[in-house]
Image 1 (cartoon, rainbow, N blue to C red):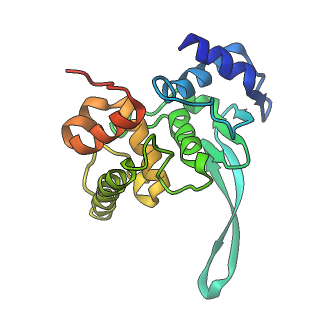
Image 2: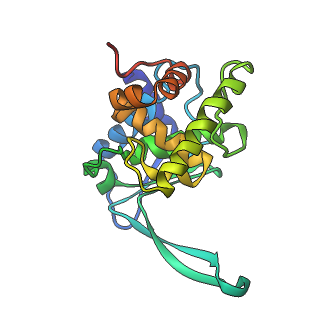
Length: 210
């Protein structure tokens, strides 16, 4: 793990934004979380990723949405992290340090680096590159079913161990279940055993051993 962290830090460009001074603490903390996802898997240290941009807190980005009559409405949105297919991850340092005590785990580094895994094949669809082609059918069946179940739970406002943000898209679902797998593994295993087993096969880790 330590060797992976050293290689990750050496290969990636870390840049402080919004007045944040980059430090070794920031680099090592982010690299450690990112390398957890790589621990027992064959990998190339997120080959599409070049830069990690870190803000001191949440940051504002311009947004555009369709309003009534197909009118474009411009606005601003506060974010704690983003993953870009063009080779960058953006993170809020305060959200890394002081994560909310929500039973539905939220770890912005795990979340955004799960998106990086999802993007390695050029698509952002909640299906990362799997070791064997035979694994895709089971992956689609289990994660597809669990995604639809979370959408129904979110619509009905039912409590769930998974962050309901995962119901917004399959890509967000994969990122959210990755967070939960590492942050709340026992709850995920107990409530969603098949989903847990599928993630255990993919990440080649068991964060909730008996």
